[in-house]
Length: 430
Image (cartoon, rainbow, N blue to C red; front, top):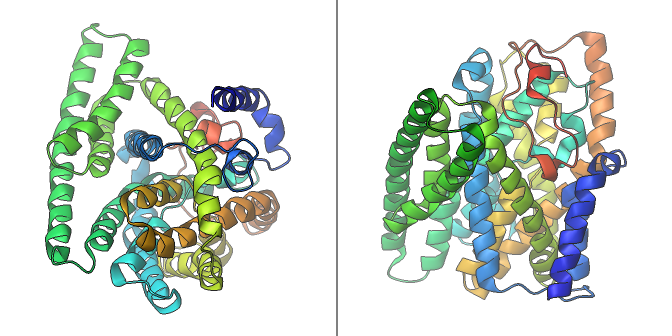
């Protein structure tokens, strides 16, 4: 085990050295570490990496808490205001429609799937991950405003989808028992507590940090480590008082980001930690989730995966953006670049750990198949489709949306490409 762990650390170091060069040949971190997981896992693996259930669950929970907090904390409501209508359309109209359409499709296509299980599959696959289209996200031929639209949606839809996943998992776990209604009610109570607690914690922590920096009591370097601890604290303390830690982490990040008043670099430590743990989650996806899913894969699961990446994603996006002023090419481009990534992987790992094997076997293979297909499809298509769309946009002119500012840079190590510097995008240029 020490040798396997040392090999993983070595590969992480080598990836840090050569990630930019590897990105030129479309080898992103998700692709690389999924393949590494397959090589190390119990399925076709040569070193038989088999982490304990506790290790898998802890890494998944910590990573999701960090990602939810940082994605929310980096948000600037003032910066979003010029294009707020587009974000509202995608997140508050398109995302619920995506979950609803995915639920109906799962109930009609997947054999033996209950309503709760269908909701879980749809909600777990609703969040998108811009990191899987990393080369597109730093490609200057694509208008910065469109990259921003895709990036902001990716940064926020995992937090919005989380309550649906939590409710669905509670319903699946209690299915067939007399505690079904009680379990769903308990999940709603946990969500409410997490929402309220996360708001209070984030606002209080943001006010304290702003006051400490203004008085010269804190340095930015040490404050970054404190924010890293705060992101985990929002999860662990909410869980300790009976709330949902994931919702608390997301809401705390929103509240903290709106009040802390500190330079953006105080979040850098949290972002880098989340990037590192995200890479390890992709490794576990290849080592644990993919081999387990392959043994129970059906043609219905493969068909659902293909439809989830196309119809289930693109139709709600097209409907939600109707009347927005975006042309058809842009709507299709935004609809296609909805890769399923890190959040879906973590939701799948949590389902494996929380549910009994019979329940997990009907749902997890669908999630794993969809993510695996997305990793390679969006990774391969990222550059050629970006180039084609960029050429079309250069002829017809940029889509009519508001001024662009970079607010949610793609996750560093996961992206496998260099992030544009914040100051480079203030005027809409990369």
